[in-house]
Image (cartoon, rainbow, N blue to C red):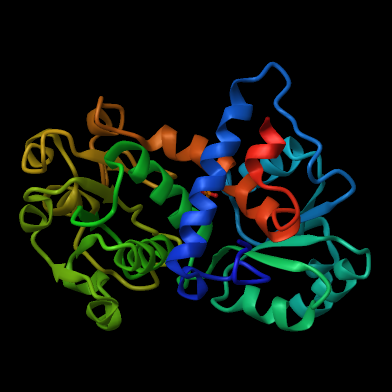
Length: 316
Ligand code: CP
């Protein structure tokens, strides 16, 4: 069964069956990572362009590694040395890149809706959203889902606490959309100033009390305080933020004993998470990064080649 979408623009457009297909395919691809030669020829002759208008460590590197493990050619478009600095628009940049016949353009942009705009104007290739403003980060939500499934084996009935700068977080939005779609019980927690008014309509519960959020949680997702997007003062000081909303050992003890701690990165140690907790036994933060490669392999594969050959046959 193929994906129901030509592009991957957001979790909002994916069905539960699409999500299951991506997670199952990613799980199959993980086997390649333990091979001496971590490469299959599936996407040979295909081209993936990484078009990142914002900084990235994990997403861009993992898309490049994912494409290379599938034998696709990859181009990392460097915005600061491109004609964007001469004033070329996003649409013109996309149309010019499309003229070189790539198969996929992976785009990260500071403006919400930029991937949707590219998809409208670049009809000959697939567009993948690698994070658009404060809107969505669908591939992060999918790799988070894979990590949760690895540890918990299900979504139904899980209590997932998402704590931190909800207002500026595209990860929070995509995680909420995906987890609610898959049957988890999601509670988001932040100071009131960092909770958008529309969030309750996502089918999640909202609290300003971290103890309520953590009580009996199976999964704790901490979010980075996104100071680069905060144009106002949302809390009195970093010290106070950590005192009221930082995850420490005492607070984590309120979650279930086998709760996992997640964070999309980059981490602000000592602001939203105690360094001791970031590196503790319950932390799966680096597993999330590893799952990022497998998840992005699955997405590239399903958008391009997955309709012809099942992933199991490729890795056999
Ligand atoms: N999680 C995430 O998007 O990290 P990067 O900004 O490093 O890509």
